[in-house]
Every structure is written in structure tokens, then in C-alpha cells.
Length: 285
Image (cartoon, rainbow, N blue to C red; front, side, top):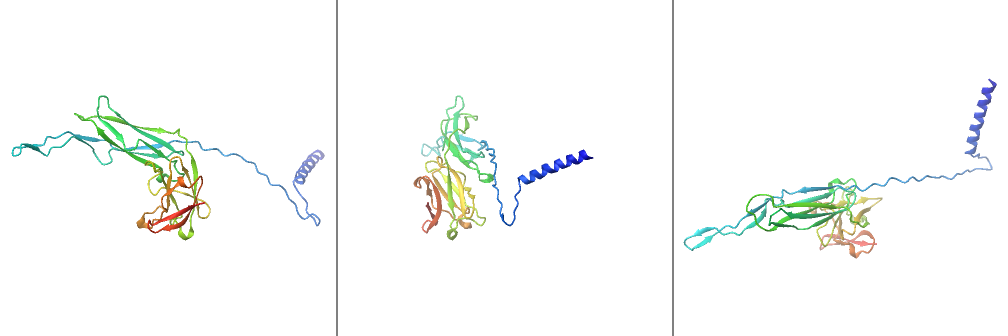
């Protein structure tokens, strides 16, 4: 029994020492106590780059109508209603290819046409490449996309069949330069819609590259009325900021903003209204 009591007493003393080591005593002369608060930093895992690009094809069907000699007119000794040989798509969108970027990185896509063996038919795209911005988190509906069109440019056929092959190639190696576009909404001339959303539409003035179809992609809303967007400025040099609505539903938007004239930073805010254009002007600070 005495041995058991000795053990219990030793344990009690150890506990008392532990408590004392992390305790302060306040009395009439020592009325405050303080202790430093420390934190341990654990680096979070970085998201890897995942590439995923959807390719939606037109039916790639074209019709070749050979030259028609027309109908002999004995009164004039001529052929009436003669027509020249011509190529035409089977439908308006037969030659369309739409690529949609679901990757968390910007990508470039190249389009090529190769004639079938022995074929003399040639074809070309209205744009041989397209550059797509990275997809925005939680915004699948507005994933960046671009559409190019293939048309037949020459050659003839004498039978129905394959005339060539179209190849779409993803280039995920191109380095991009991303900068933050910051937009501070003006409460007196607000561009946000009723849901507090602001959209950014970007394009390249030299080609058809766009970040997505109009009205663009939602900017990320921060505290108050500040919105941000990560934009690849190597790909896009013009933007428009608006509320995502069309003109019949109360749409509001800025004038075209040429990023190349703004310098290295983009801290934009509404500064006025262009009554002739019906659009808002912005300043950069």
C-alpha cells in the first residue's frame, strides 16, 4: 500500500511541475501575464498542370459540282445556264472546328490539312492556330474556346470519297506571361450586375484569339467592389469589362481597352461615360 501511495505521489508531483512550467500567478503586485504565440508553417501542395482540350468537329462534308455545259439553244446557237465547277460545304458549319480549353494552363492549338494520296484538292483554315487562356475555377460554362473554319481552295474530283485529313495539334509547351487585371467598380457608375458579377472579355487585335465567347469570363470578386482576373498578356492585348448582359437586358460595358497603352500594371476603374459610344471609360492607376 505504501509503495502504491509513493507512486501516486510521484505522478502528482510530475503533473504539478508540468502545470507550473506553463502557468503564471497574478496577484496584487503582478496584475498581467503574457506569452508569445507561435505558428508552424506547412507549405501547401501545388496543383499540377492538367491539360484537357475538347475538339468539336463539323461534319467535314463538301460537295464538288462539276462544270455544266448548260442547255443548247437552237435559236441562238449558244448554251444557256452554263455554270463553272465549284466547291461548297454541305452545311454552313461543315468546315468548323471548335476547341475548348478545360486545362488549368493556357494552350496553343494548330490546325493542318493534308490531301489524301493522289488527291489534287487543296484546303485552308481561316486561322491556322488558336491560343486559349487557362480555364477559370468553377466556371465550366465559360471555358475558353475558339472556332476555325476549313474551306476548299482548289482542285477537282471525279468520284465521291476521301479527299484529305484534318489534324488538330495541342502545343502545351509555350510559356505564357500572366498579369493581374484589377478592376475597382464605381458605386456611382457600377458595371456589376444584380448578382454582383463582372465579366472580362479579351482578344488579340492581330488575330481572332479570344479568351471565350462574349461576354467573356467572370472576374474574381474580392473584398468590397474590387475584382481581379489573371490574364495572359502575351496572348491578349485588348479587353472589355462589363456586366455580362446584352443591351436589351441592361447591358453595361467599358470602351475597348488597349492594354499596350497602359504600361506594366492594370489597376482599372470607371472614370466616365462616353455618351456617343454608350460605353464607360476607364482610368489606370
